[in-house]
Length: 487
Ligand code: MN
Image (cartoon, rainbow, N blue to C red; front, side, top):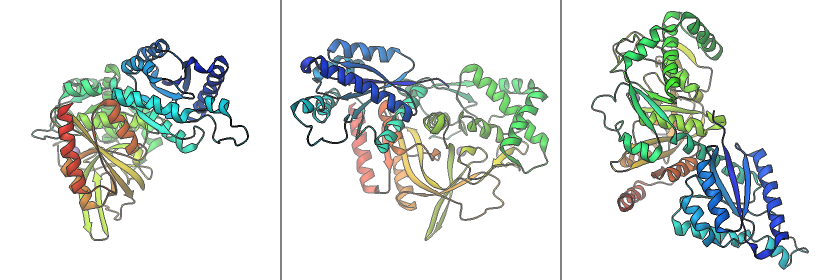
């Protein structure tokens, strides 16, 4: 995986003399070093900026440096912000303003005017914030003491989000076959997503995949079968069927790696020359960080890959998901999510089982798939839809539960959850916003991260929370519609 770092740019001015500037630089270096030991990516102190030229120069360098995933600024002292205009205007990398202070406490005896001049982030950060507001510069503002765990957590989450943005800008998606016939929500403008999100979405023939599948060796399949045995329980004697999934996985991975693709989609309507719809194959590719979308849904595939990259250790608990059916019993109202095969085992509560069952759809042989229950815990579901002229990212807070029924005859992985604010209102909000049946369900990417990601990419964001009402959402969507048309 590509290595990223973040740049720490500290604002000041010449007014206070060299001694103060030396102290600011020393402290900035100390802060960057300590924060680097706590954050998921290194924070590299770059400069105590005092002039228009210094700021312009560091921002241009940030744009040009592929390892720089974002810039974090802070004003230890006051830094007149007209000198930031050129640099901030040029900055193309994600930008976070950390409104913090070197010291935690106001020292009762020690405080005098010298102390005040050195430690004036409280008003330095306000001057600094104004110019970004004036420039309409998208940015994240995080306020709080830099050593406090909650501040570091938010800064770390923002870093992961910025890396998700960098990953998005380079993402390539491999499509095997087109979208499922007549389906609307999985369609979209591939030129628009490349302009806004950077995705290169292109198609490769299924026949080519079959050629590569045919060339996979027994040894390659044996090796992958060892990995399956180490990762999953075998609940089938039909080893040949499992081996066929391994063959599919190896071939898909070869094609994606050769083209630099991190996500793929396929469709049961185009399996020409394939004996099984990839089930276990797609699931185990997702477990390795590849994005996937069923029925040709390349948007959800790309979002799965991005959210995995934004999650813990660069491959978090995020899965391609589909709202399937409801339990509408008063007091026990839940959504049941699943797919015909392909749910990522990163969300499993237990060791997944490999099973072989018939599949009515697609007219092929019985495919092997992983079967498991999802974990309990707070999560989100996310859907990217093309509104025609703009992209909308919809995020809903959910709480996943241990499925309330064993469902012994359900031959697929399943997750059960409570939608916020409640099942009916949650459905009404989701449908009102135009959210898809396909989503990415994530346990470790937060709604705040998705909001920040949408802001970095410059797309609309809609969040359905425990406090959302249909009325408030309708109003928000109406106003958004006008606002986005004015942009
Ligand atoms: Mn589907």
